Length: 226
Image 1: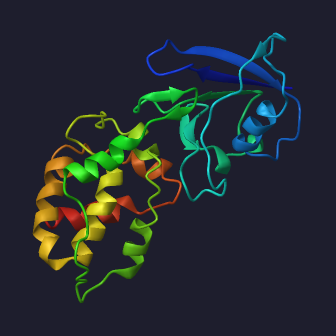
Image 2: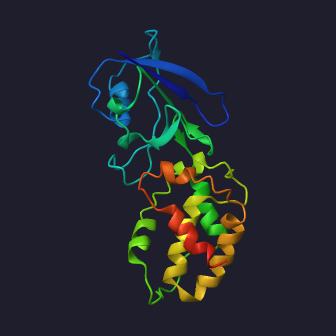
Image 3: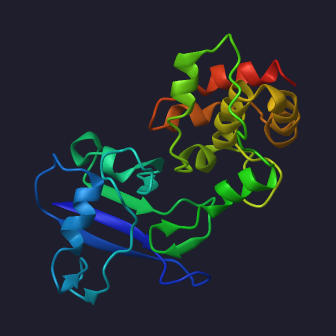
């Protein structure tokens, strides 16, 4: 029997609370599968046998390529669809929403600030003008960024609404700088203002990236443009 503790919140601004559920089933399923299992029946009950509302969580592809199911699992930011029960230690699982973003409902958060930061910094490719010395492998890796927010969740420097935009922002800066010669210098200044000057190099973003993006290489390339 596994105890599943979930930090829930009915709606934005309301006080979060903890609710527990019992799971007695196979361990070779993902956390996404576990949430589906708990939500499956019409009458959902918690570990005290009380009827309760369905657990709110976000998903799309369930294959680790959309980033929608990002949450904190046993204290570690991760994707629910790529985290399996059998790989977690102990008989308790604790799920909570990402704390760096406003909570919509239960495990669903508002990550629109990631896109708003890109818009505010005028970070877009514009006319495609690639340089001759293309680094295709690193460009491909950086382009895999899901904007899931896991790197921002663990970043000690990132606070929603402030001028430091975090590691997810660096991937776009690098792609723009290598695909548009005219914007290369401008992007170098934008990167320095919204990342380079305030990154404390904890590199925790690298540890949690579900796409294994070589962020250190991306940062190093952009630092040369400052």
